[in-house]
Amino acid sequence: MSAIAPILQITGLRKNYAALRPLRIKELAVAPGERVAVIGLDAAAAELMVNLVTGASLPDEGEVQVFGKRTLDVENGETWLASLDAFGIVTDRAVMLEGATLAQNLALPFTLAIDPIEPETHARVVRLAAECDIPSEWLDQQAGGLPPGIRARTHLARAIALGPALLLMEHPTAALPETERGAFGLVVARVCDARRLTTLAMTLDAAFAAAAAQRVLTLQPATGVLAPQKRGWLW
Image (cartoon, rainbow, N blue to C red; front, side, top):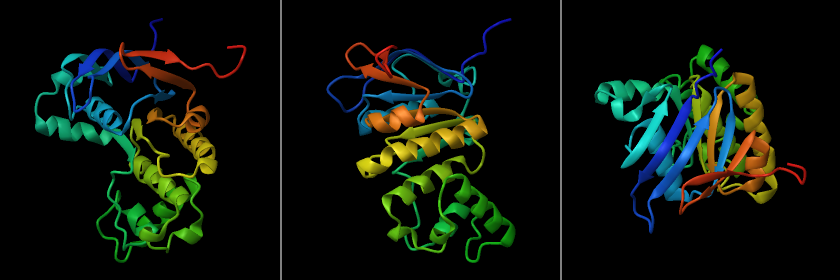
């Protein structure tokens, strides 16, 4: 029986961007349902990595394969736009309607009719909030007043709302207090395991990575090697 093909495979990647050295990834393969964290990408490199995986940017060298297809082989813009439905992206760059309620922001992936939210959509919002460990009392609060922990969970909830096949996380704990990062990682792990959701997180947060990922890799930027991070003194 042949091995299961990876959801994401990167080989020999080099991409120039506004940094002292190009982004290099020698080899990375993420299996279906696997949760992987990569430590060592700053904010600009993490954003670039998301763009390379989704096909918004193409490598200068090497290749990125997602769902068995090279990003270089996407035929046209229409095909590329349709492919974005397969991705969920957790990033602080995602726009939130600060004057709207948390419930209205969670409804946006489902509908633009958020004032008022239709009962069926509201029920979906309530389930989504519970899944991502968002207490129901926050749903009627304005998004502009959300504490960092609830805001992080809101980004996660919106990213998974439409059932993506691959979740990309771009420094998801950058705004979180240090004391909350591990707990958020456990929420991510639980949600992704329940959905069997393949996950790649770019982070500088070792506590989050240890809690959220089954496999933690540290990038050696000069060579592009992703070195496995040991989790204990025995392995």
